[in-house]
Length: 284
Ligand code: NAD
Image (cartoon, rainbow, N blue to C red; front, top):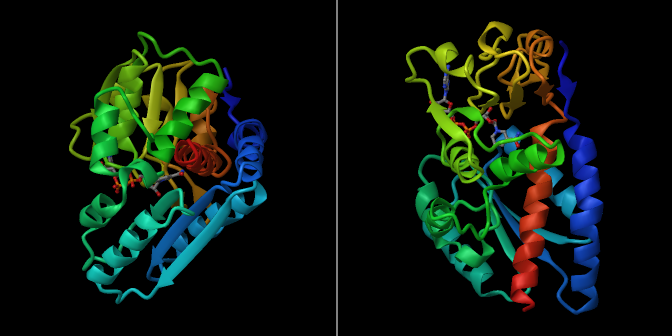
């Protein structure tokens, strides 16, 4: 068996024209041009690329993006002042603080300062709590993108055994919660898990979000399973790759996402979707 390769770029293109560009144009016509504020602190090379791609995606789909670039030495209190200004600015509908922040800045405190109705990354404790309660306002963009993949690829989740590898607040935990909401039986694994393969081998759905190159190999995957690779790593040749041994797992799985071109574009698309939703909410 060889897996069907899920083309996240193609799915994104469809979603952006159906669910983003048209709604952005309608909002603009009504006098509410959707606008995202992005804050980048420091000069982390990967973060700079992510921010550039997010801004480009906004501009290509009729959303406005403004970006504040701050040096790594930025004082936390000044960042909080800026977030307060953006919270009060009615022209801004979404606020995204690119993570990670430099170690002297408390990311939890910074995210908690964003008005929940502008927290389009879905990471504010209120939005996390709402997700837990089954009433999410904004779903965190990466797990939301993965759920869209399941929906658009008609991958059944009800009753499925799902393993999420990784337990971060950004990906692993909300991913697990969304799968639970969809009726899957979910196991969350982490670096502390004693025998990862025991769990993955009985799963119809595997979502890997660890940042560990070649963590998931073919012998760990149940034939026909759907394997979603969230990881973004560099291999020993410096090439972009995920957490999954794509060549090996492709021969066993039923569906697989590539890196690049899988979850990455879907994450950005869901950021656009959340920003449009925030703008529609603000516009009444
Ligand atoms: P993180 O470092 O916050 O969390 C990593 C998690 O993986 C931890 O819970 C850790 O316990 C677990 N882990 C690490 N090594 C493991 C191992 N050997 N076995 C089992 N579990 C292990 O990272 P994160 O922010 O959740 O991101 C994870 C990966 O996803 C990174 O590569 C990141 O770049 C990528 N990412 C991609 C997107 C995207 O849009 N494609 C978005 C966010 C993050």
